[in-house]
Amino acid sequence: MKTKQIWANLGVESIEQTKVFYQTLGFQLNGSPSNNLVSFFFGLDNFVIHFFKKEKFESSLESKSADLKKGNEVMFSMAVESKEEYNHWVTEIDRAGGEILFDSNKDRKAFYDDNGFYVCVFTDPDGHKFNLLYNENM
Image: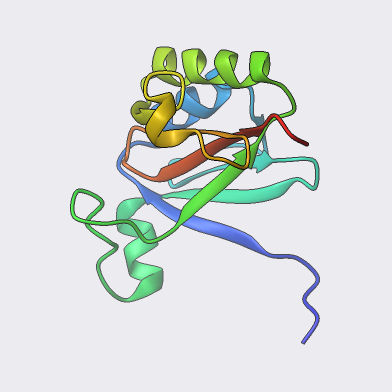
């Protein structure tokens, strides 16, 4: 099967909080936010992530969404081109209200591997997990 496009749909508590968080990090809005949806482009290929008001999201799932305090439904990974950009993102994520779960800069031994990856795992205000990656060997 060949698909025309693929995107992600996630549930959030607050559309406004989500909008502010991702705009603060510099992501471009996809369309105009509504009371039930805010959407952003990610990466060079403009991968779309829709953030639906949790109740709306759950009604389309016909079930409850994942309890992000106990686990996660998916983890997105985002690569950057330089160590400076990596450091900037870590600072901006923290400033925007994301939670840094770990960062190679603080525990280089544990989270900097032999392949040259710096890794920052963080969550957005709703607990959705992301990897921020930089590889100094590429």
